[in-house]
Length: 405
Image (cartoon, rainbow, N blue to C red; front, side):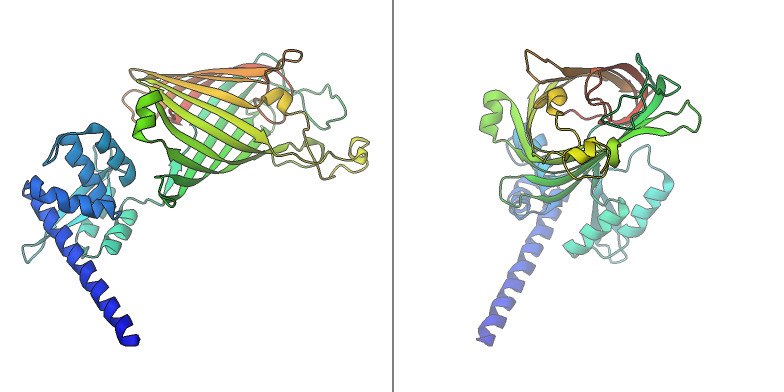
């Protein structure tokens, strides 16, 4: 029994060593431009999940290296590789070479420290794929955090109406903030937890967005409102057949919580299950999302009588009357410019409410990741504290990431 077990382990090790030897040979074929010989070896390794091989295979299809040129297949392998790779090759004393796979960060904007780090790590023995993978993460300072929604800071955000100080959901206050102009910023990040776990090329991800409205131009400059939105979701790309048929690129579904982190009468929160579809027609990108609110029990009368301000239950039972059951987000690229339109409506004829947002961005000078950013908002639900109040405002500043969906 034990002998058979060890024999299996030995055979597996030999097979694994043979596979790595074949892959090394495939890389040599690639370096010497013997692409027809390299292709089947790289393909086999890419199918095993090797990110470097997946990227190389994408290059094969993109440029027609030893295989018929196929841009759709190239894009598919680029997606699986998850990032663009560059190669640092250093000749050793024994005249052999070793290659480190890194994200494509060696460009004109990189500083000498980053290039120095990559040279230092290129001296390491990277024959083990695991070592190569870990070194690549260190070189690129990559721990898998990606931008999610747009990230921006808007020093000027002017509202046509003044902001009311909210202390109670049961009493109307006439106290106003001193200024109709404030600053606004948003941080939105995504962490992919796994890829292709169920065999659908899907990503399982966590998302987090923090949106802040800052009364910068008043005494003590308080944060008027902060909204926190953690999410858990799965993104599934469609098949090429569906894509060609109707331009549907992907489907996303998940759970979203949103709250303002307050307690008592200032508390606002709700939980949703959501389903989103992503479409593209050339430079036009469309996201259509619908949601189902997870119901909560209504708070007791003691809360509304002011006896128990920390009672558990629904902070905002009528929020769907203002947010509706979904939204449409449209982006259009025109040269370096991006134009955006968001539409939201409760689709009620007797008590119709919704919101519309227009935005525009363009790179600052020749920057690759900093943009001038302007947005105009009108309607309900701009922030949780004012979800039931209509606002009309224009904001101006900088965006540091703009999403297509």
